[in-house]
Image 1 (spheres, rainbow, N blue to C red):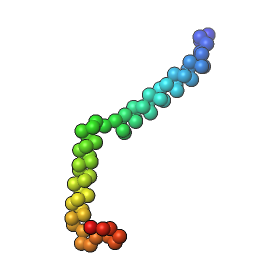
Image 2 (image 1 turned 90 degrees about the vertical axis):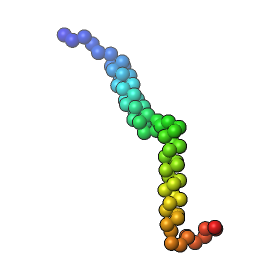
Image 3 (image 1 turned 90 degrees about the horizontal axis):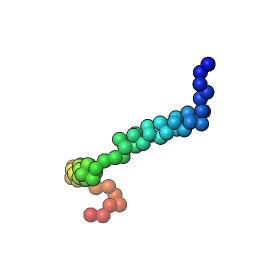
Image 4 (image 1 turned 60 degrees about the vertical axis):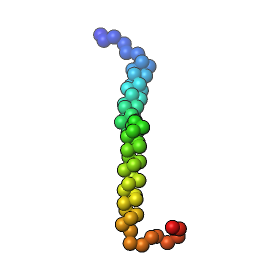
Length: 64
């Protein structure tokens, strides 16, 4: 006859494993260094300036 299983411990272990999985996903999704964030911002700014420079007409309602 197998030993009895404590369902409360099983439930808690399962919840802990799911929490670890979501934490791992969040680290991959949001965990970036300051240098990486600055690099992305610089690239986005450069792209924005480049596309604005290639516009034929400025959108209405924008000063400057």
